[in-house]
Length: 157
Ligand code: DLZ
Image (cartoon, rainbow, N blue to C red; front, side):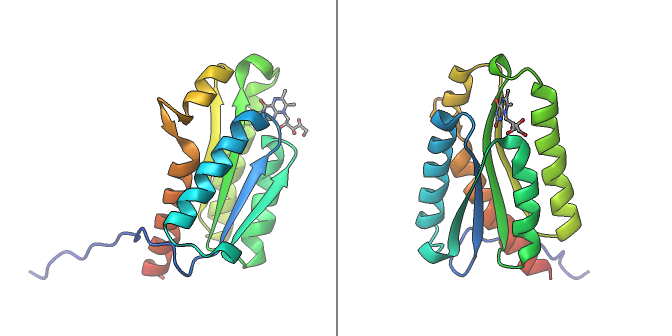
């Protein structure tokens, strides 16, 4: 029997073009996500001029910008960063659910990996814990996921 062939995306960012979309709402959290994300892209050797940072008002708007970026043909992956905090968000389910559904749809529609780096937490403290605190760093994780998925897509195409 021939050996089973395995595929996985490499963790090297050289040659990749990445869009990072950041919501301004809850900027005290999202700024940290952006910093960790871009630092990780740089550490993985994505070139400086291949990282584009795109600002939108809130997490609800991320999906539209993600679609425009994915359809532009300029990017190998799109990273979406935001923070939806239940305590401050009357329509938490609509904003968080809308963002999650939209990003999945953009991935399926365009084939470009769209990474869900939107924190959905009960309060600001939990959000900060996930933006470089004791619960990890969603921005860094999102960068690593984007690189791996972009490379996996190339390996499978
Ligand atoms: C309106 C709103 C609220 C209440 N809370 C948040 C939030 O916690 N995180 C976030 O990213 N955005 C929030 N927004 C803004 C919406 O995402 C959106 O920008 C507005 O509803 C305008 O469409």
